[in-house]
Structures are given as structure tokens and as C-alpha cells.
Image (cartoon, rainbow, N blue to C red):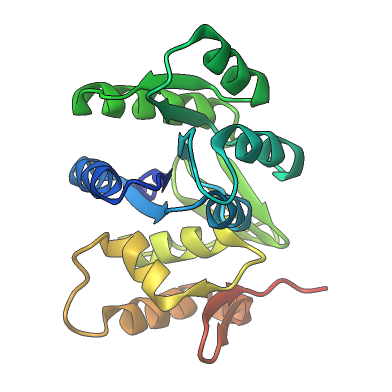
Amino acid sequence: MPAPALPPRLLVIEDHAPLRAQIVALLQGAGWRVEEASDGRLGLQLALEQPPDVLLLDLGLPGLDGVELCRRLREQADRHIPVLMLTARDALDDKCQGFGAGADDYLLKPFAGEELLWRCQALSRRGELGRSPVLERGPLRIDRRNGELRIEGQVLPALPRQAYRLLLALADAWPRTVSRSELQQSLWADEPPESDALRSHLYTLRQGLGAAQQLIKTVHGVGLRLELPQ
């Protein structure tokens, strides 16, 4: 049986701290990996650096409003990121601006938590339809459907669950270096083990890759990165 894929990742960009905390708690309780930002400029930076599976975007933001942020995201991102806009504005013109900037869905405040989850799940599935189940990074090929790994065409023995998820997180983030805290969040959400389990799973991953273990590079003081041959 293949190791399960990483839980979907959502970025919440909302400047109202109590509402943002409520949304984050709701989504994490439903199993999502969640990141957050309180202003538009930081939110856009995070979305471009590590595209989420779904972007939850408030319309009225400091620094860069939601409409302009969405417009820039569509211009600069190298993939389609599903965007759910949140706003208290219910005028038709406001909705027109949001959809015109590239939003995929629209939810009026106040909203029920269940509806927010349903819409996020629907957008995540829609995003999955446009994503290839096979992830290729240089000589590395990962088939998300069955967990099969190949290096230069050769099938590798199946990795243990957490080692596989660690490799998948690095491959998804390539060419970016991924911090230890981000990797811990990917593997254990908000309940990381007390011991340094990440080090153990990294060792297992490198052993499983055999002669190709040089693909996993430690960037001291920063984190880990998938290092591909030039």
C-alpha cells in the first residue's frame, strides 16, 4: 500500500486576528496544513514562494488589497492556485472585481465553518484535477498514485511512510530550501514528537535512496533541499 500523500496546504490571508485564528483552528482541526499572513504584501510573497493548494483571501487587506493581490498572483505564479475570497461586501460590483481579478469562489462574512470547509475541499479537488499525479525532478520520479519511486528509470524499494512524505515535501518545494519547522509541520502538523524524529526519518530516507542520497542536501542553519545534478 502506498504511503499517504501530504495533507492539503492552505494559506489564510486575513488581517482580523480573531477571525484568522478561528479559521486556522477550524482548518487544522479538519486535517489541513495551514499558514497565515495578516497583510497583502507578505501574503503574496508567501503564495509565490510556496504555492498553497488553496488560498483563502480577505478582500480588505493592509499593504495590498485582495483584488490587487489576486491579480498579481495570476500574473506571477507559475501554476493556478485556487483562490477563495472572503469579504463582508455583498455588492455585485465587488464580486465582479474579485472574479475579474481571478478569484475562483466567493464567500460572504459572516459564514458557517462547515460551508468554509466544503468550499475549501471543493477547490482543493479542483486543483488536484489540474496536477499531474507523477512528480518528476531531474532523475527522480515519484508516482503519487502508488508511491512508486524511480531514480534514472530504476524502481527503488518502497520507503517507510514518513520518509516518503519527507521526500515528497522536498520534491514539491524544489528548488526552495525547506526549513526544519516547515518539514515538521508537513509530517506531524501541530503535534511534532518530542524527540528529534526528523533526523531519524532523514537518515531512513537517505538510506532508501542508496547511491542517490546526494539528492538530499542539508543547508546548515536553514533546512533541507532537493539537490539536482546540473
